[in-house]
Amino acid sequence: MAPRGARGLTRRRVLGAGAAAGGALWLGVAPAVAGAARGTDGTRRVRVPRARLRPGRVVELRPGAFELVGGSVAALAGSGIEARARRRGGRWTPWTTLAGGADHAPDGRRATMGDPLWVGDSDLLQLRARRLPARDLDLALVGLDARERRRTRTASARAAASRAARPRATATGRAAMPAIIPRSAWASGVATKGSPTTGQVQLAFVHHTVNGNDYQPEDSAGIVRAIAKYHIGSNGWNDIGYNFLVDRFGQIFEGRAGGVAEPIVGAQAVGWNSVSTGIAIIGTFEQTAPPEAALNAVAALIRWKLPLHGAPTAGTVSLVSSGGAGNRWPRGREVAFNRVSGHRDGCSTDCPGTSLYGLLPALRAKVGDAVVAPTRQLTLSGPESVVAYGKTLTASGRLTIGGAGIAGEPVVLEKRSPSGGWVPLGTATTDGAGRWRLGTSWRRSADLRARAGDTVSDVITPPIVPSLSLRSPASRVRKGRTLRVSGRVRGSDRVRIMLRRRYAGGRYKLVGERTITLDGSRFATRIPVRRTGLHRVTLQATSGGRRYDSAARYTRAIG
Image 1: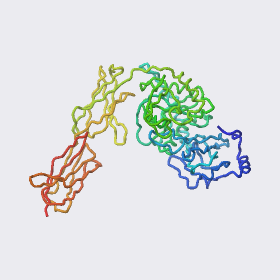
Image 2 (image 1 turned 90 degrees about the vertical axis):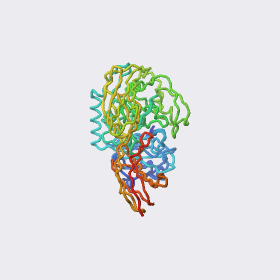
Image 3 (image 1 turned 45 degrees about the horizontal axis):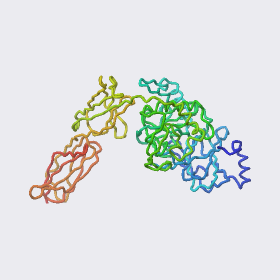
Image 4 (image 1 turned 60 degrees about the vertical axis):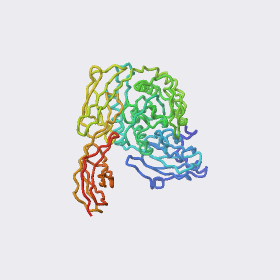
């Protein structure tokens, strides 16, 4: 909350007050931004020395245009650093404490940057501290250029009004999916790191984003985009931490990538991410209640999302903490949660604000005890025997709901690519009993899964019999030199080349080897030959825990 009178401060009054208190510290363009790094995503990074943040001083930064700011946890902890920004046109935002907790983070990770504060389109930043920080303050300031802002606003408005964003009815008795603005509307050009991972959805954590509540509907998509850029660029996370974000007008935005119907693991409640979905209301709700439109949207989202994953919306669930900095509970502790919980229930934080937390019983009543429809299940089985390179691999399975087969539904067989994405291999249609069967040419062992709409099977990794072709080496090679070995390997990306020498009694003993990671299928390498005599060369590859050897080739080492 802003201190009394802070909203009416002008530059002249601050200067006068600072002079009376021993002098306000003003950092102009050159001192504040000199040496600051600017990322390709439009983020500026500035370091403020701790000595300049002594209590009673105001530090002013002119970093250029920005919309969101966050600081380093090490400096924010215990220092009570507050920030306010001057929006274009001269109006100042209220003084707001920069949050520096470790409670927003991926499981098993410690946060280095605090929660971001959205201030709107601003060009001037002021800081003040209640106590001297322990460390220099590292700031990250995220800005959106005019083109980004226009494109994001336009695409989100179209998505909100489109038929695709409207509630979609279900035939299973579950609540309809509410209108959700997809990532494509706000995340164009925002590069994520790595592939989404899936867990379980046993409960929903409710958050607030800790920024002003005076934004307009057309600002919301830009706020989501700025938060994502901060989470990825400054925190180093794979993507935005929240699974969903809801503005004060009731607009729902898809957060972390991977699909709104998938149990995507976020970075919104350290130690509980793999068993929950995180929904953040855009704004600060410490002393102000969120509008009814926002609460209604959150209720509709939870009423659809939890039953989708087989979880009831009412009552409690017992879960085991995976620990971590910012988690309220040690690793291994079993904790009972309401199915609709506040972030502070699982982590050491004030989130989602005292006012919003006090409204959670009313929110649970809005959600109600939604029907958990019989869950759809999709099975996937691979071939009974190992498939040789280039031959047909036949996958099969069954699509059911409550044990009964679902007929006439397409099932897509997908293969995980080296980059981590899923690539379709083909489509089959379920028969009257829900069974499906599909063949595909098998050229490399990889993860496989099947998908029918929002339903995904378990992942299997069928092995492959690789094709190993070894060219005959030179018939003779001099002792002390190297033997050139070449060939072709298909169906494996690693091969072991083994050189064995014949000893008395006809027994061959390993005398040299090379392991090669292939870039393509062909290879060539050299192996030293140290003694005279007959030598045997073979290739070996491993797939599915089994070893496969090529035909042998021979050479004689001479003195």
